[in-house]
Image (cartoon, rainbow, N blue to C red):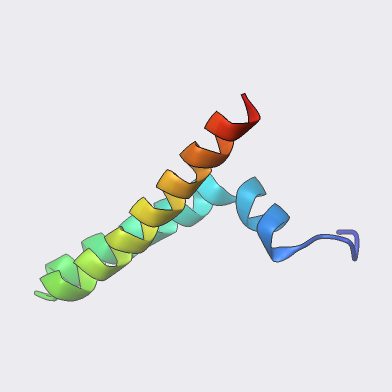
Length: 60
């Protein structure tokens, strides 16, 4: 991986994987009875997905 990779470019590249991992984390927390924690991680996923959607609209 080149040294020029930024956090933003890497997170954009792997956004689908990140969202999947956040949802798996949320599901696991729910099964442990930690609904509030699950909602926190789903909120992060939602914020990332919305930000990506806004980026795509701007570049269109």
